[in-house]
Amino acid sequence: MATGGAAQLAGACGLPDAVRPLLWLAVAEAGWIAARGLARHRGQLRLPLSDWVGIGPPAEHTGVLTVPLGLAVVATGLSVQPGAAETLGAGFLALAWLTAVVLVARFALSVTRRSTTSMSSTASVDGGWFLAPAALLGAGIAAGAYAGQAVGLLADVLRWATLLAAGVGLAGYWAVAVSAGLAVSRRGLGQGNRVLWWIAAGCGGLAAAAAARALSAGGRPWPSGVVAAGHAAAVVTWSLAAVLAVPIVVASMSSLARSRRIVRAAPWPPTFSTAVFALGALATGKVLEAPTVTSVGKAAAGATLALWAVTATLHTSRLLPSARRRRPARTTDVDGAPMVPPSAQAPQTAAMAAPPG
Image 1: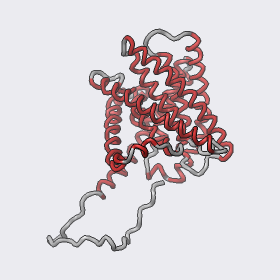
Image 2: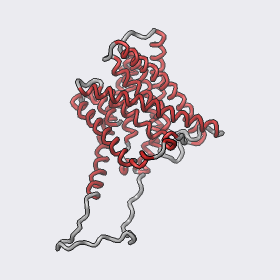
Image 3: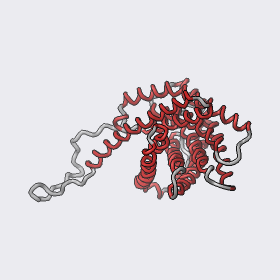
Image 4: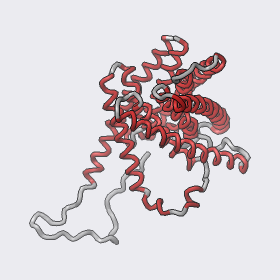
């Protein structure tokens, strides 16, 4: 997601030549992540259907929401590429909508069940909850990107899908924002991963961008009342995201500094959230015709590319030593004599690596 977001903002930062390489890198990352996930969890593919359809607590359903969101981001980027790339993006769009509908519905059902069995339904709210409306908003933006290229019935379906996703996503964003505000007022940010709250500011920007995209989707213009409501929703939502961004970024940076997670694991959520916050600022600036807001969007776009470059470097630096450690060990000594492998029962005396932060 972070690479796809950086690709969409490279042009706004005066780096149009970086758009295509970043976009295809995002496509490659999507394929690699999918293949790696299947390899890691291949045992789970043999589980009975009851295990797959079971509904757990909300925390079990948030991380997987990055799948439809990432697919939507890549689809949006591919929509402006010629030839086979555009067709590939249409496939990503279909997958984004399919996974978004299924996974968001499962998350909503999990939240509903918890609220009926718990006295405090907002107790478990964290920044990851914003991924639910974000998945719908991303799918809506991707549909809007293809609406202007379609004709006939398909164009109308995409336009309405864009409007529907923007409306439901906006409502979901505000519902989660209110729940999160209640949760934070009662117990603070808690002791969990505070970087997750960065998603909150990013989701607000994504909601503003989705509203703007819905109003500008190809085809017949929307009624004036719909346009006015969409403009107001985009401006108010992005304004709230901008206000919340300051304490969220400060708390997240403080958390990263204390845990050193920025060294042990590249913090992709801040990068992507900054990207969609920038997209929302650019869209809001265009709606308001406000150069100041547009300048904020360009500044956030530059910060996104800087964050992407830093975290990509850190992530690569972590992968290279891991690859060297995975090389097969020598089976013979320097004189060619076979080496005796250590006993599986022998205690390991080497110090264990520190757990990830």
